[in-house]
Image 1 (cartoon, rainbow, N blue to C red):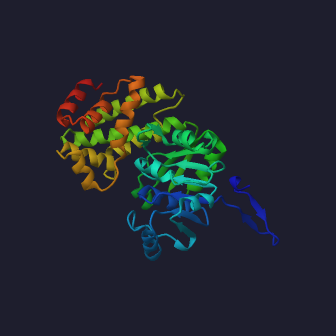
Image 2: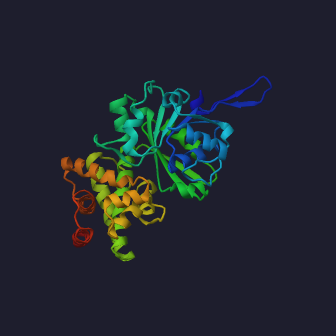
Image 3: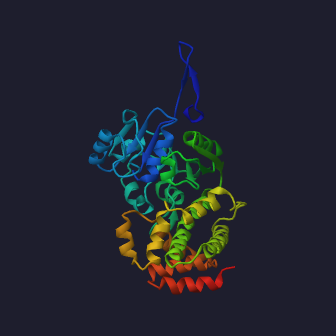
Length: 346
């Protein structure tokens, strides 16, 4: 069976490795980085793009025309398509790597069955309006069995993966054999991935670390120093722990890299679009002006509203999270909101 990377002996007594068929849904920087990892381990990739124009440019230049343009791909081993249903039909494992605000519109085009597909969410965001993490949305609205749903996360910026700098990922799935298969697809000389079963905890923490990165960026824009930032993030991990335990009790250890490591790299790295977005807000940009200048999605902007609304049910104490929401959605003063946070940090 393909799922175990079975090796079949041919009539010439040579091994024939049966690989799972992989499809990538998404064309941004993280999708491109994942495609680079995967193509080191499989002979072919199906890749869904929305427009023929981008596909034609990709084929000609051998790189994604808009993201990580320094990464060259063996395009002769990529099956490009603008038909999402064709991409799904050609795959055993589907990587979903689109920004969370576009998940519903992309998936609304699906008419083919997802029942026997392993779907890997590489989305660090919540589906807006529904306030559901991606695996919950797929389970409830597309009837995908939970054992066929996985998430991949960890402290791994697409830009560093493109440069083949050593990075670490975690793959979570309730069916551990599926998680192991996905790890083998991703592992190479610069990627090390491990298995977890904390699907929901990893999804929620992936959303929240983007919001805390916005907070860190706001504080940087307001000229708070490194000493304050370290205390801010120390308190952020405590908030994250309280919230994750409220929505999904588990024996998770938030000191592991998929939680704390991802929070740290997103809050401190210059590659972090959420930190960049927050920094612009701290320097006086309006939300709209910051979004227009970035020309990229800062997932934490949408995540802050979703987590705020979810927390209306759980009432978890989260002053940093509340401050980000108040700044982004209630148009409160960044300096005044962070002054309030300052008094509540431990």
